[in-house]
Length: 218
Image (cartoon, rainbow, N blue to C red; front, side, top):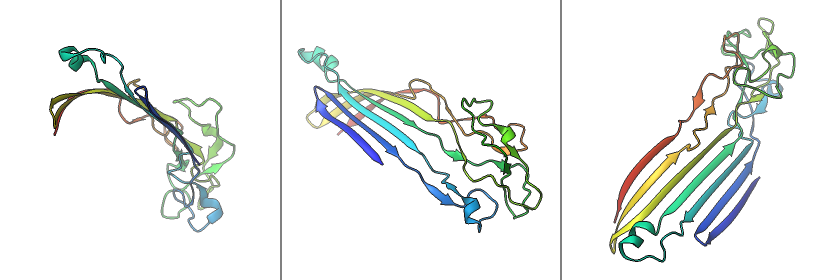
C-alpha cells in the first residue's frame, strides 16, 4: 500500500510526503532444510514493513523588496529538507556452530517467543528463548523472526543561484546529512553461542556530515 500527500508550490513552499506499507515473504531463509517449505517460509530478508519519507522545498521570503547588490546577496535563497523513517530489517537466529549437518548454517530450537517489550542495545531479544537443537536435526526456529532497530535520518540544504550572465549561474550550497546526528543501529548479533548474542555492536550509515560547495552552471 502506498499513500502520497503533495502540496505544490505555494507562497514559496512545496511539500511531498509518502508512506509505504508492505510485507515481503519468501521460502528459504539462512541455512537448514531448503526442501521443507513449511519450515523455511517467512519474511523476506529485504522486508521493510513501514517506510515514511518527507521532502520539502522552501523559497525564503527575505529580501524580495530590496534592489541592487543587497537583493543579489539576500534574496532568492532556498532550503530543502528530506526526512526518512522506516522499520528495521528482519534477521534470523542461527547457531554459531552448525548442528544439522546439512552442509551449511542452521537455526536452533525456539522454546519461547523471544520478543521484548522494551529492547535495548545490550539485549535486543530474549536470548533464553533459544537452545541448541539435537544434533543432526533441524531446529524449529523460523527464518527472519525478529526485526532490527528502526532507521531514521534528516538531511537539509541551503542554496542560492547567483546570475553571472544570461546563461551562466554560480550556485552556492550548504548541506548537512543526518543533521540531528541520530545513530542508525545495525541488527544485533544473532548467533547462538557467540559472546555478543542478542547485543547490537555496530551502526549503519554515517554520523552528521556538513559540506559546502560552489557550482558553475552553464
